[in-house]
Image 1 (cartoon, rainbow, N blue to C red):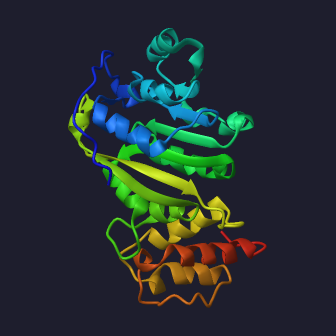
Image 2 (tube, helix red, strand yellow; image 1 turned 90 degrees about the horizontal axis):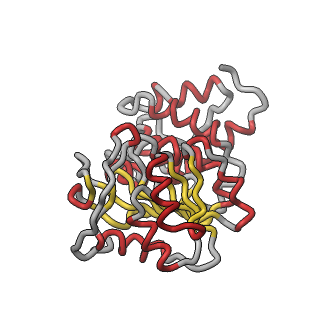
Length: 270
């Protein structure tokens, strides 16, 4: 873990609950995040949810220009007044943005303090953009980060972690307490780094998602009662998995291998 020093920067706007806003105000945490990102001039850096620009301002100390996506119209206006042409601001709901529109400027480097209510759907959506993405550095709820980086046999290991680890190398970088935000959230946070893997091959996201839903739908039950019968109906008999194992004990590599076999079946019954 990176241990950020103490210190705070002021925050002026009022956080809006409907946008899940918690403004990062701890200067030490901000500096630690930017150090982890290590932005360089000329990179296609995109910040999601710049808010009151606590992270934006420090990033723009390192690079001449930055693209950002902000849903709050009032904050967007403040950002334009403050940074002018140095900030290429897209005023939109990030869940409706097609990130491929930004790929002409080079591989995407995505950063941000994500609202907790959109973090999981956004991460799943970004899987489809991994081929044009260099890396992701996001502040998330710590529980979510723990789930994403968890290994088999642990309580946090589940569908989300397997799905994202199938396509990314993941690493928890910085733990952040509620006091680093204004207003303070009721949970701890953490910063995660995600690097797209270049070896998943043709593992379709919908197929892997369907497989994980079947496997983890009743995670406390043995595979012989859940996943194995489901696979047998689809023509996969020999899985090599212990029938008495549970989904949380199956390594990511085995889930990927099963997804590839499932995707190779011409027509699978509903």
